[in-house]
Image (cartoon, rainbow, N blue to C red; front, side):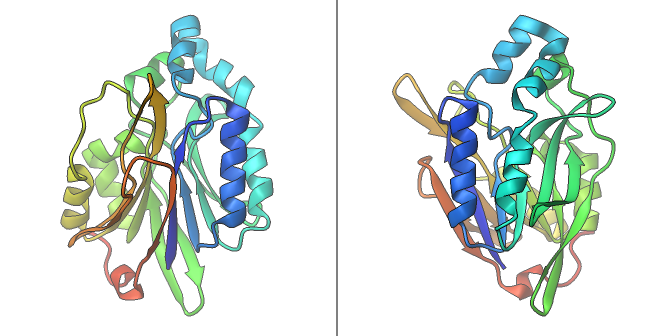
Length: 253
């Protein structure tokens, strides 16, 4: 299975960020493409809405970005594979931080982030209630995949639930803060991969702040260590080939 992790740089506007993802989809040529959390949001977008509107921030964000997932769905029609489409603000009875899995213009699965962070709580985001798994089918091979979004990987119950269901876990994460301390390696992802016998495919974002580029490197982490990692925090489509034997057998505990 050929996995593509789009480590994308913030273009500083919703429209330009979405165009970048659409262009990536057109060129990716992988079996599964994973996009970062809140990929459409420019640096500081959500934080500014929270400061201005408090618990109405999620509603404001949805009103500005409702069209984003439809644009990605249209692009996915001509993509010969699965897209783990980062996250967008979804409106239902409440507002959720939602990851859609797309296949040729259709929603193959949908996951609502469970372990939301303080800014999301203040914004009026509601946590999801359950983890999911979905099948990825290729010629003569299929594998169960799961999703965690960013801080989900810090919640023991979420981790255990999703790792019981899947062999490969896609982990779209958001843009880190410019002031966030640098983390060496992928200690949390590696611990999960080793404990549950799963593969973690982590996709991040990067940005430029005061002339300095910052972010977390995207990577594929296996129970045996880091299989592949972006060379820097520059924008890149990291393509990683996963042998079938790595994705076979029991996926967790």
